[in-house]
Image 1: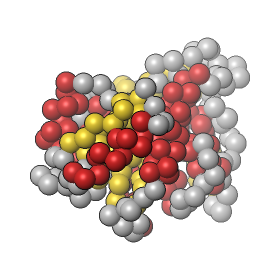
Image 2: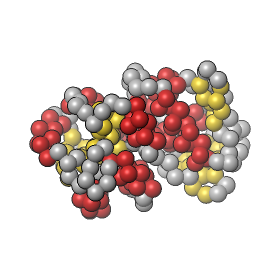
Image 3: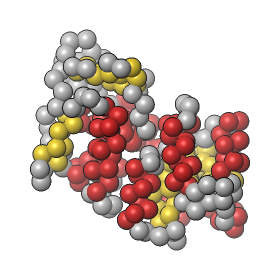
Image 4: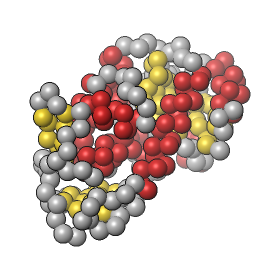
Length: 237
């Protein structure tokens, strides 16, 4: 059973959602304030967060930003954000701050369950993927960059690179097939495990975030009107 923490000031939402998600082997617990969420995260383990965009004390976007900048294991917990509207701005901001997915309110509980299953499946299966050809088992080694797929760690000359779960999955997807061009739709389909139904701008945001964290390495190459590829040459371990 997966444990979820709902952070939403709508107290009427928790009860029905708890009952519904139990059908899909989710155990939902709820708090109404970010301060209460911090206390729960410090005392218990959760597999994912459902985070409302509008909250007292601070909004969900600021909470997500602080979560991603904090200490492990909080930093890597999957986050699905709920937004009051389907506005492009809300979606972009949430993804830029490190959310793994979003869902506009009002939403269908079945879609929420499906998105949670996708996020958790992606996190669970990623380390077991086959290593790239001619690389040592469990590691992908390039000039200036090393990816430890067993530990889900990324290291460059300056030390470890702190990535969100989605950023790591994007880097791993591209690095397993250096030089291969992935279109934006390809990336969305591969990362989400379902047909892309968001906007392709989401990929541009993820690539931009990842590039900033990998600087000064020029690991990701943009091919105009085509997509992205991994551009670092391989090296011997």
